[in-house]
Image (cartoon, rainbow, N blue to C red):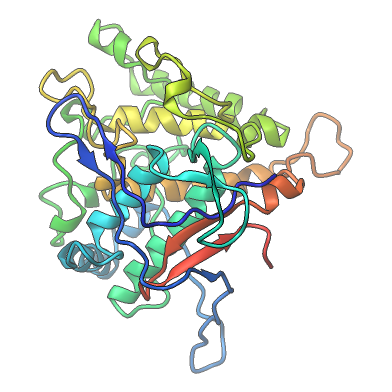
Length: 368
Ligand code: C2O
């Protein structure tokens, strides 16, 4: 059976290595969650649909007007009170609570349906890509509504691109001393050794780096990056290999099922999730004794406190789409090989999010 919407009013405290346990609690919904409906897309005066278009961060950062808006949207989001589900704090908590098992799976629709005893975990399975897509969808709508620009779109951090010199570095608009005010896009908890002109290394290994064994040239890094994209995206033909294994009511992918300190991960991640994990680890503070929790990007608990998180996931979301367009050179049959799961258990999975009106939306992936 598909995993169904969880109610949002549940709280969980998450233990961390350094400091007091964190609360990943979202404000309790004031109304019953509503079913998702596709919004009416606004048109311009000439009648053309005003669609959002996500662009590469290293390109769009050259447009001061874009950076000004992007920064303003986050500045306003960060200024919202803690009780507002749209606030940056609560946007972070959405990730922390769904990724750190604050909720229990449900088996029947509706906010009051009985819970099963199994924790809800949106990583390590086929749930990874769709859950983060819808998370970004609402996050982006909230940003857009805070600056009254219905066409505002998140940028994507184009780290898979090995041709454009700037694409795989941390985009400059997320760093201090940018040409346009950008304080709301900055986060202090990032690895100081991985600042530009360093490029993101998709074959990154923090242990090897600590032993001084990862001194690669840019050319070597780019070569490894292409290999990772080939191995984790292009050659992952089946939905299972790319998106991850099934996740249904009763599947327990919680951290408690494995020996985390031995480096074990629960569930069955797909290639896209695996590649994305490395970018998290590379960006956060790693090998820093003062930051044993690898904050921010290096730990799912903290990751969404860094605005670059949403731009990173914007690229993951894009690569999901790119994957489906890769022509099949193996059989030359012309048939589309790289397709999502078609089972009801996948398509009928439901999640609950707050939207830009602070209303609770129940998002059924399979709903037209
Ligand atoms: Cu929920 Cu990039 O992780």
